[in-house]
Structure formats: C-alpha cells, structure tokens
Length: 113
Image 1 (cartoon, rainbow, N blue to C red):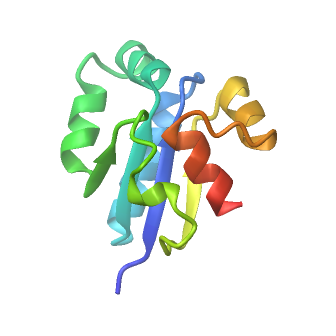
Image 2 (image 1 turned 60 degrees about the vertical axis):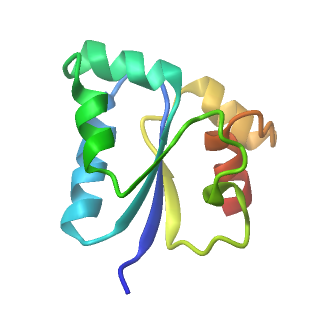
C-alpha cells in the first residue's frame, strides 16, 4: 500500500517549494491529499504561473476545499504517513500552534499533531 500524505499549501512565499514537494511525493508513489488556502492560490499564480494551482489540482489524487471542514483529512481516525505544510505562512503556523482549527488546512494539521 502506498503511503498516504497530506500536503497543505498556504500563502507564504516559496510556492515552488510546495510544488516540488508535491512532485517528490508523487514520484515516491504517495497517495496525495492536498488542501490549499486562497492565499496559496494567489501566491502560486504570481510566483509560478497563472495556471499553476490548476495544474497541481489536476494531478493530485485528492483535492479538498479549504472550507471543507468535514473532509476525511480533518479526522484523527484518517490514517496517514504524515502531513507537510509548505510553504507555511506565519498566519497558518500561528493557527496550527494555537489550535485555531478554523480551516481545513489548520484542522488537518491539528489532528496530525
């Protein structure tokens, strides 16, 4: 069975890092579950290409809206090999550190911790 990995993309600078992590996970055969903030979508468009997030979305096995708090990755009973948040904005880092699970990305990180 391939490892299941959650990838959270937030709006910090460094969109290419998030894209490269996604590519590496896919090359390793990981089952990718991706959630991106609205700020990440803008950053990807400005730092990589206007259609970068759309291309990534088309390649991901599972893509979740940041507002979908009921997605499987929001549950601690959803088994994964782990979660990566990259790039990670200070806002997202703070929300994760202080258990502010107001979005799917933050909630998924919370249950992973």
